[in-house]
Length: 135
Image (cartoon, rainbow, N blue to C red; front, side):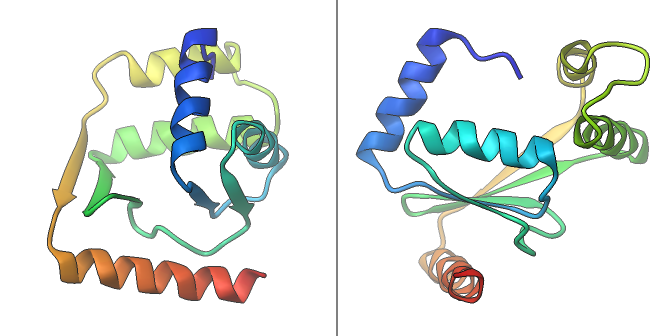
């Protein structure tokens, strides 16, 4: 997705102050391209890891943040978009136009923020277990 120079600077500064570990289920050329970009900004990125099912999960400080996409149609559009990016081709529009049509036209997404220390510790423990199997 297009990222401004200002956003790149913000992301790079954030990653220089924190340890950022990103795991991605996919291992496509697009996944690897994004992983390389995020690595260049300071993240530790691993692709091809069985993780984050059925949601995307982020651990930030003392919080576990889960991201949910609602509606079969939205999930279907998201899957179609992702499949097209894996093939490095778009169906009827460019990849970025497809991205804009998905995310800037009312896709319903819910973030759940959990601050329970036991949940945070459990997610970290499971994540470290996944990472230990991949290296």
